Image 1: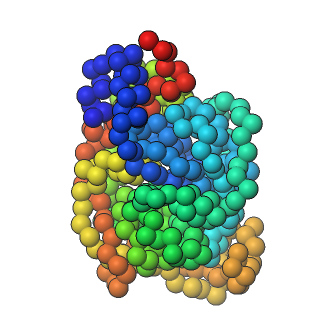
Image 2: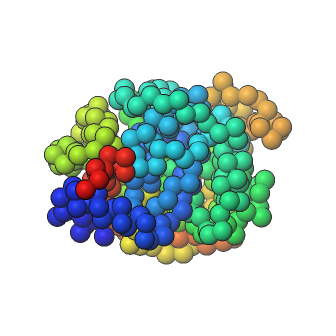
Image 3: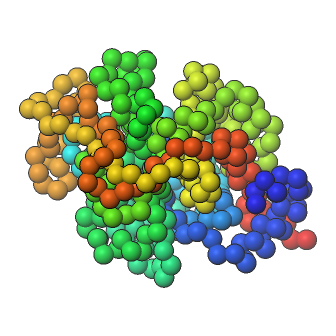
Length: 372
Ligand SMILES: [Ca+2]
């Protein structure tokens, strides 16, 4: 569908988009995000995609962005999109258990949107936390909803625990996280160069206990892990092509973010992570894989060490003493065990994903479409 758009003029595209929106039922999606750099473009994808109806955005303070900043940045980003008015919320500030967190400089970049301005809005978060907002949005729907997770699984695990009867309302949980044959991504020179964990992926690592609870549930999970995202590397050539095709405020924002992160792209370590998961929601061909059980490794130890974030409260949100875990194995995802089988994405179509991001971020806002 989107590839066919590419040969049409902006005006034609606007008309087709308007007709399409009124005639086809879109996939209803709740987007759960930790507001890291890749989450911003993933949010613009789910807010702009003609095949998606975004119901709401839930975040947490466990991942990259902190709650206070997320509650300003989410409506700012939504203001660039076709779904500016959806409700949004934040959840807990710390993981369900454990003391591990993203590096401080990454969190600062997340809080500041990499220094790229977005529109100021007066929009306030809903008076619900993320768990309550997920439950509320699901309870309003007659049709099933897709959950898209682009951060730690903290909110999803807490929602499952509190509202297990909601589960039939969810058709799929598409999640960016984990990895199986690919190397982990915890070790990043300049930030975590001497970290002992060679296998885990960050979203699982910061709240492995939450991830295990999700894999143990009966949700229909689709795992967009490092094995898949490694196939979609962002190159300087792609950034150049993206720049040459900018036509909307959403695309302009993402182009500036790419400019600010040229060093990251040149390091050859920047991939479509959350964006790929967002695309998989409505383009299942981008996740070709198989069904297998997954479990998450974590080993308790007596005390913390170098990688412990001592600013975390010693008592968890659930009122238990927060445990220390071995950072070398925390959050490693493994195939096997007795959890229900989930779909593990193994192969994708990189060029299709690259093209789709350009097309979707350039779908004009309905408010900008001039009557003919
Ligand atoms: Ca993320």
